[in-house]
Image (cartoon, rainbow, N blue to C red; front, side, top):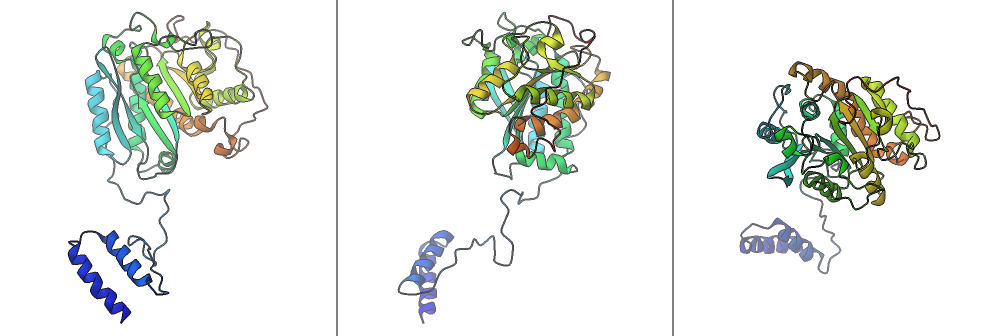
Length: 377
């Protein structure tokens, strides 16, 4: 009789609600059945019935359409084509990609493509890959565009990339200073933008607008790893840039140098600190700033630089070579750099090939890279 009364009351209540609020109905049934009764109402979600295992919040719950981003771009794009291409990729992979404008400098939008598996909501390590703070270093942008394409094009078939997208939140800004890119010049606002970051000798340095926009993005997102792509020279650059004293910071210097060697082993690039690679001090550069700012924020940010290509604007026939040279290192960077200074997050230093107490020497190259022009880093 009690159940029949509940059923009749439920029918009347559903009609009065316009049969539109299942949550209210469930609450009504629960309250009614529990009044003066030992009956317990089971609020198990209707989309997770008792004969099915509970949903793992770390696993995607919805299948996605196969990703088709077309052929890898192997030509130099202007800003409009680049923006249209990134927007198109975002539309073709809505579960992974998001295009956004994050700033403006001299009337030019500054933009990124964000890559992560949106179906996985657990906390992720945040990664920044930016390129072409110097607008005339076109191969840096083109290399990053190609690597971005490969991340999307290989997602459906590569289990390692699928897993990486569950644990990483990747922001790819292919043109840091679009005004310089549009005019094919190194300087903006009359200065070298990659000398406009604050550094220990000038903590209140004024950054160019495009660099300030990237700094603001860093403050908003708080990245655990950054890599700044330049051209040319085929080199991996480690802090410091503002001094020729090797970075120590406890064992972080050791870990940095071991990581630099790992990156070099993957593609044959030279590796070392900025002065060791280019032959001079470069105060006010990105790798120093993001490392130090990440330290202040408690992020343990791993920040490096890259010099790609044999020249700033090599023939288009060489673009695929540079993209392929950077493919495995970028995957390694995304996987390792965000946790380089956090053994618990990495899992095990020894299993990952690191010895925090071991200081390995930087190779003694006989000369500066033949692909690098001193003074134009």
